[in-house]
Amino acid sequence: MPSSTPSSSLFDRWSATYDLPGLQRFTYRPIHDAIVAQLAEAHPSTVVDLGCGTGQLTRRLIERFPDAAVIGVDFSAGMLAEATGRLGPNPADHPALVQAEAERLPFGPSSVDVVVCTESFHWYRDQAEALDGLAEIVRPGGRVLVASIATMTGLGDDIVRRLTSRGGRPIRALPPERLRRLLDRAGFEVVDQRRVPRLGLIGWPVLTDARHP
Amino acid sequence: MTLDPRLLEILACPEDKGPLLWFEGENILYNPRLKRRYEVNDGIPVMLIDEATTVDDAEHERLVALAEAEGIEPTFED
Image 1: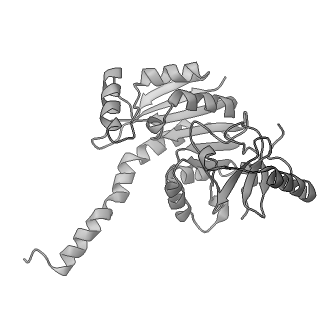
Image 2: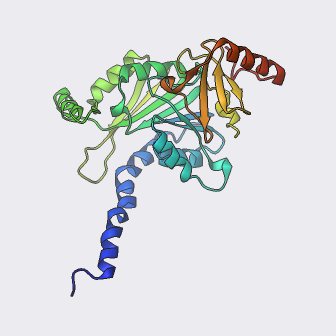
Image 3: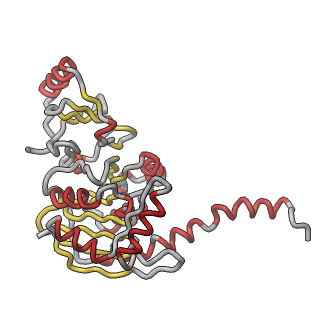
């Protein structure tokens, strides 16, 4: 069989993107499922998806909380443009999108019930500052759910940060215990923390659920 | 372009965390305390301090007068 027929070259080109939905499904969906399950009993009126990227979880949160204001926040204009392009025809299903930095969120005091933050926390320039900001905007009784890649020890954390710093954008993957301490210091109370199993070579992320007293 | 009213209710300046004035006709959010203007691109408020513009006194006066004339209220009570 000839190795380079027109149809095989079509498949070659197709393969570059063919698996992407699968990649999405296996890496992100388990985390999104865990977040939605963790919020099973919640009745928020305002939800912020911090680091919403292309808005996959944001759209699920709208399905889950149809009466809430769901706001997607991302630092990247490109990600938000992509999120806008994926919105369906019904404006009622659209999240409000805002371009902002995690450390400088543009929301008033005690204005948000739930903040979810998946796979973006390790990118923040200043994680302690971001959590202090969240303590200001989350209402008493509100919650912050952080799902982030995590190293087992502080040693692994330092190695990851040092390796990724060379690329100019250090990944600050925290051991779960250190994230717990950061949340405590910002005035949150960690009520649950566990690893979320998923397929693949990337480490299991940790989901941390914290309440604002 | 309109903004979701439930977003507007809580939208604040990322710097001083205070309320903003929303000028729908000009697609801008304005913080009169810092004289700082944030653009709204394709319905997405760009709430980045580095991308905001500080306006001069004349523009500040114009925006404050316009808010008064059009009955534009701050996004929330300070």
